[in-house]
Image (cartoon, rainbow, N blue to C red; front, side, top):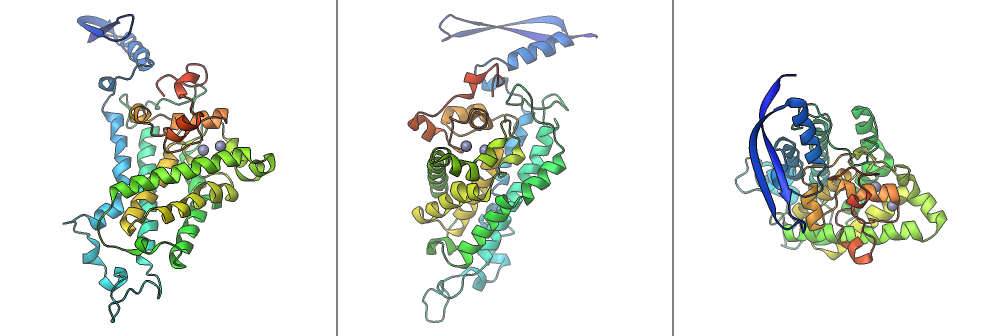
Length: 356
Ligand SMILES: [Zn+2]
Ligand SMILES: [Zn+2]
């Protein structure tokens, strides 16, 4: 192989690891050796933002994609602003002739429909990006599979099979859609949720995510510990995946989804007063984040998430592989408080890859 001229970088660290000196000298080294050095560097457990290639970061577009519908419909100046495309009578809950609220008459389905579309569009766009991520189109080296979390590698599967299984299993989006439709149309949601006034209230969205995950954490602990019979019928089906893939996120049992997703959703709705836009944003961020933490690969932003205690696929793989740790999903804070948090790096390099 023809040698390429590259910059060879040597890093020296002092014994305490507090300071570093980088020595750059220009040498001619073979490409194969360069690739090996790249791989060696990639297994270094230190966090170094500067070492991240740019291309995989394109997959971070998933996060704003989750909010496509509420951002398009409720950003001032948007050509698709909801007030320009829907009649006021479809969303105004205070337009009765006598000036009183008509929320108690019959719920208007527009908010529900937009909420369902928000989650569906966010999910499909995220899965679209994940396809390109998984098959190496967003790799710094074209066509290279991303770093799997477990050393045994990602489970092989056909993307189409994974996608159809994920979207069609009754305990997943089917049950979730039924819950959202039922609570909306039977007016079981607090009155504020039916309001289109205002924009996305970001602090409330964040509060909803934290409360949802906190309640889900408690119910997850209970599912594991109340009784072997309860565990068997509720959560055990989800634990057949010791090396999960992204599409396993909602694969379990009806009882598991009710306990760990629907009860926390209903409790959270009654604890935080959101408008319809904040509810949409929270719902989509929650559903998509829950999906992403089941990814068989690590994402470029995971090291930052580890630093601030946001849940990553590696954190959740610890739970699937070793059961007794990391009961939280979106945040690791509750496990840290409860004493059940295990860093994924503690299982490297034997069970998990470095830098996950
Ligand atoms: Zn899981
Ligand atoms: Zn579990």
